[in-house]
Image (cartoon, rainbow, N blue to C red):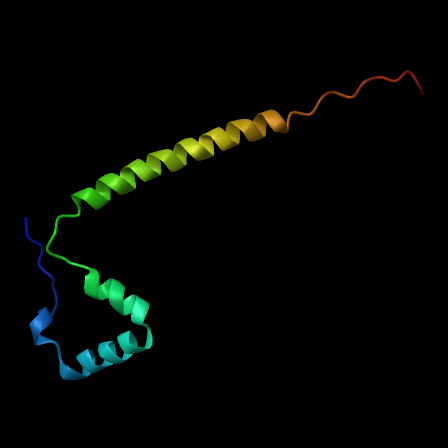
Length: 85
């Protein structure tokens, strides 16, 4: 399966001013530039989707468990009648 970037320009046909703008931004933030340069768009996102789905399931289980523990902790005992009026 291949993905195609839609738009008026293909990656090789970018206008020079756009390329200069992106290069200037990436020079100012080398960490972001590294992420962008290491990103490949020619691989399948299946592994990422599987990992994200598993992580979501664990987060849901965590918050459900937290909600149940919170409900047990916040149980308020009824007031006892001390006999004084």
